[in-house]
Length: 294
Image (tube, rainbow, N blue to C red; front, side, top):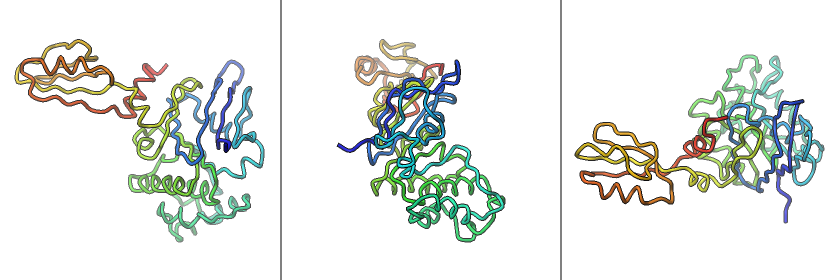
């Protein structure tokens, strides 16, 4: 059985009393697109820096294909984009890409594909990076992360500063990487982005793994949203309906996925004219799992 592209085994990083990651166990399947979610300070960037060898663990292991992440043999197969990318500002975008491609034996077979898809023209790449907008720097960082056709792409907040059109092109880039069998691991604060492009979501809280499931299965953890319309004043509460709220003739609330009793009670309530039950979104799940965020 092939070794997973990413395996965190009891991964821990501390700075004195401060904890960045605590006993994190996580396997990422080959060919998957995994979204890595958590509130600010949850340990996402620390985990990523451990995975690309920028940090060394206090305890446990960060392994890429069962090789320590700090080993050159592991890092050679990875494309990485940091949350705050930086380039030589006096050099052109193309020259920056050339310098980074020279660090890899694979060269840059996917540069043109990525640049064209993201909307970085030849004229753009000929300009000094110091003249780039924030969005253009973000696109250049994405190109450098994938240009050598890595087996594993690790992206830290990759869609920051991208406009809506560039964001759609970024999602298409992720799909193309997955279609050729590459593995993608990306952190994000944009839940809709994760829902659109990821197969799996891993959530962390205070450096610990909170949940790791397929996107569809993770959404099943959250309660459904219910909206009931009446031709009279709705009841103030229905047994089993969480967070009930009445606004005019509309009663809203939430119901657990497996609990049908509140729905039966609503259907039997006089004056009901319409009932809508909405599937939970990834955002609903995130908020429900995080609670008050502490």
